Image (cartoon, rainbow, N blue to C red):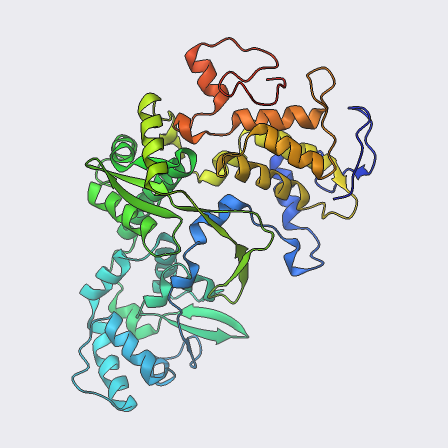
Length: 444
């Protein structure tokens, strides 16, 4: 970035107010949806929003049937190749009995698929919440467009619906014979169950991202108190643990220590620069790079720190809120985003500049454990002139200090430094960080 001197906190050269400058959070998001895309990479996905998609390459792909929407079950089977017919039989647990020719496979599946009501229940119970919502719509006879994206949400292994092309658009549909056979299946009960499972998984990942590591039992206790009776079970919660930690691309790791089970953040997304590209089932490419956490010694040190600090309070209200929503909803984050929206350097994308700048700071403070001084020096090297001392510090400096002290801290069990100081009843001293005394001396 070019050097832009800030001579006075009210006089800036080289910056302009971007298209998102001065907008509140809701209007800002609306404006971003309408942004003009000059290039495919103009859009920007926040780092924390990438965490759930880390294992995208492990998802199954659903083959596209040559038949069209509304076709009969037989036509759908005839429009599917032999290999995929065998996969359908395997998913529905239908014994092929030595059938090898396509005609034999089609006839066998045509006769047996509508009779797999019990198997249907089992398959649906293992689908994700998004996929169950699709199944409910399919049973109503609806054609569900943009079907390819559902492959990455568990529909790839669902043997009772077909993916086809309709006017060059991928579409899911269920043949009439299968809709009639499964008409009495209560899919809604699975929606409720999966909704609870999704909330538990979301709470687990939130605890881990904010605290670096979390005892599973601690989260189970919160869920047991917060989830309606009858919808929560420890077995379901442990399934969420298994799902979060499965696959080599998962950012979460299950860790056993001194007789207790923990989930630790094993890897995390970092800067968009020099990133990897992952080809998703929907044909898109998304960018991320993973940096690995330390090993067991680092986890053990966090456990020791957590035992000295109270558990993060108020986390049960995050059962229906993602960690991204929580972090980006913090006042210290919103204030900094607003500042960068109002001060976009020439040549930068005014729709994505603020998000990229704040993402980098969040990542460095929350994940990489960078010090405040390190980040202030980095910003200065980029061309942001930051004065030392309270009286002459420009607004940006104060906002960065506020972000540093307002973000969750792993060693404090997810509390921020500011919250921890308040809890301990420490005096709030201007120009001094009580927890990190050797840091850059700036205003609280």
